[in-house]
Amino acid sequence: MMPLTVIRLRWLGAVVGMLAVGLSGRAEDHNPDRPNILWITCEDISPNLGCYGDSYARTPVLDRLASQGVRYANAYAITGVCAPNRSCLITGVYPSTLGSHDMRSTTRLPEHIKCFPEYLRAAGYYCTNNVKTDYNFPTPKAAWDESSRKAHWRKRKPGQPFFSVFNFTVCHESQIRQPDERFFKRTSRLTPSQRHDPAKVPVPPFHPDTPEVRQDWARYHDLITAMDYQEGDVLEELAGDGLADEPIVFFFSDHGAGMPGCKKWVWESGLHVPLVVRFPAKYRKWSPGEPGGTSDRLVSFVDFAPTVLSLVGVKIPPHVQGKAFLGPQATEPREYVYAIRDRMAERYDTARVVRDKQYQYMRNYMPHITWSQYISYTEQMPTMQVWRRLSEEGKLGEVQARYFAPTKPVEELYDTAADPHQIHNLAGNPKYGPVLERMSSESVAWMKRTGDLGLLPEYEMHRRAEDRTPYDVAHNRQLNPLDRLIPAADLASQMHADRLTELVRLLGDREPAVRYWGATGLLALGKRAQPVADALRSAIQDPAPNVRIAAAEALANIGRPDDALPVLIAGLKHDTPFIRLRAMNVLDRLGRRARPALEAIKQAKMPGKSHVGGYLGRMVKYVPEKFDEPPKP
Image (cartoon, rainbow, N blue to C red; front, side):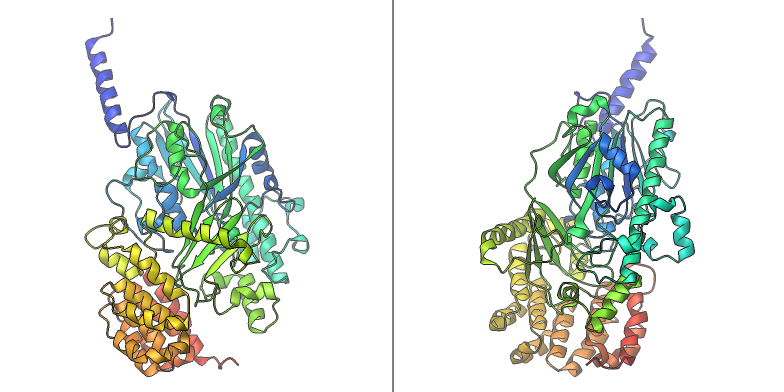
C-alpha cells in the first residue's frame, strides 16, 4: 500500500495543478500527453522560398521541412511591421483593440489579458523565448520561464512538455544595407552556388530596375538562405536531443519582405507570410493534409495563440479574437482576414484592409497623404534612395511612380489571383461594385466588432486610458464612439469640396475626435477650403490639441501660414510627444513656409526616453535641412 504522506503529496500536487490550469480553463482530457511545440520564426520575408515555388530561392532546409509538413498558401500578418504583429501573436487580440497598433508605441494590458504562454505555463509547460519580444508593451515576468539569447527547451525538467520560440533576425531589413564586410560575415555559410546573382533577380514591377535595386533584392535572398542555415541548426539540435519526432514545428515570418514599398505597407508584399507546420506521426490526425501538402485556408496572426492553446489542450479564453485552425478546438475556416496601418515610426496614416482568398480591399482614411512619406529608417535603404531620386527626376514609369503620387485612392480593390503585385485598382470599375460593397461593409463591421482604436488620435486614446487601459477604451462606446467616428472619418476622407458645410458642422461636435476628423477633412481639401477660413480660425482655438494642429495645417494650405505657425510652434512645446510629433509632421509638410519655426523645431525633443520621443528626435535632425533646399519647380 502507498504511504499516506505520498498520497497526500500527490493529491496536493494535483490540486495545485488544477488551480494553475484554472488561469485559462482546465487542460482537455482528450490530450493527456500534451505535445511539445516549437516556433521557429524569422523577420521581414515574404514566401520567397523554394517550397513556395520561388525558383530564385535557395532554401533547402525549409523546403525539406515543407516536404515533411503542410505549407499554408494564405497566411497573413496584421500589418507590415513587427511590433504590432508581435503584440497580436502573443495575445490573440488585434493590436487595434489593445492600443498597440502604432509602430512603435507602448500600451498596457488589462488584468484578464495574458500572453498566451502564461496559460501554457499554468498547465505545466516550460516556455522559452529566444529572444525578441517587441510586443509594444512591457513583457510580463510570467510570460516566459526564460526569455534570453540562451533560452532553450533543454533547461526544462525531465519529461516536462515545452513551448519554445527561436527568432532569427539575420534577414531583417537592416541587414540588407549593411557594409560589404558585415554583410558577407552574416552570410559566410553560403556556398558560391547559393549566392544570388543580381543580374538574375526578379524585380517587382513597382520598383525601378536599377543596379541598386537588384543588389538589394539579391541580398534579401542571400539573407533568407543564411536564415535557412540557422533553421537547420535548431532542427539538428532537436534531432540530437532525440526529439526529431516529438514536437509540432511551426515556421513563419513576422511580416512580408523588408523592402521599401513592401515593409510597413499593407499590400500583399507586406502582409503575406510563409507558414509551414510539421506534425509528428502521433499528432498527424490534426494535420490539414498529408506531408508535403498545401492548405489554402485563410490564416491570420490573430489565430496563432488560440491554435497553440487548442493543440496543447487548454481552453481558449473568451477574450481571444482569433480562431484556432488546428487541434481539438479548431473552428470552421474564416472567410476574411484583416489588416491595419497606423502610425509607422514618425509618420501618421490610417488604413484598414479586408482580404478573402481572391480579393483585397483597402480603405485609406488619410488619402490626402502620399504613400511615400519620408521615414528615416526606410530611407537608409539603397533601393529607397534611388527610387526617390528617380521620382524627383521624373524618370519612373507609371507603375513605379504610383508610390510617389501626392494622394492615395480612398478605396483600393485588387484581384490578387490575377494581379499578385496589386497594380490595377478595381475600386472604380462598376463590374466589381458588388465585391467592393461587400468588403467595404465587412471592414466597417470588423472595426465595430473589435473596438478599433485607430480613428482616435494617439493622444486622445492615451488621454482616455489614463485611469484604465486602451483595451477598456476600445470597448467603451462613450470613449470610443465608433458609430460616430466611422462616418466622420469617412466624410473627411472623401475630399469632396461640396461637403464643406458638413465638415464645418463636425467642427462643432461635442466629441473631440469627431472635431479632429472634421478639421482633417478640411485640410485634405487644400485651397478648396478657402470659403470656410473663419471656421478654421475658430478651430485653432479648440481645447483639443489635435484639432488645433489639423486646423492650423488647413489654414496654411489656404495661404494663411501666419495664422497657422503660432499654433504649430505651441504644439512643439506640448507636454506629450504625440502632439509634438503631430505638429512636426505638419511643419515638415509645409517645407520652407515653416522657416519661422526653425528654432522651435530644433528644441522640440522630449526629455527622457520613449518610442515616440525617439521618432521626434529623428525629425528634429532632418526636417531643418529642407529649409535650405532650393524650391522645387
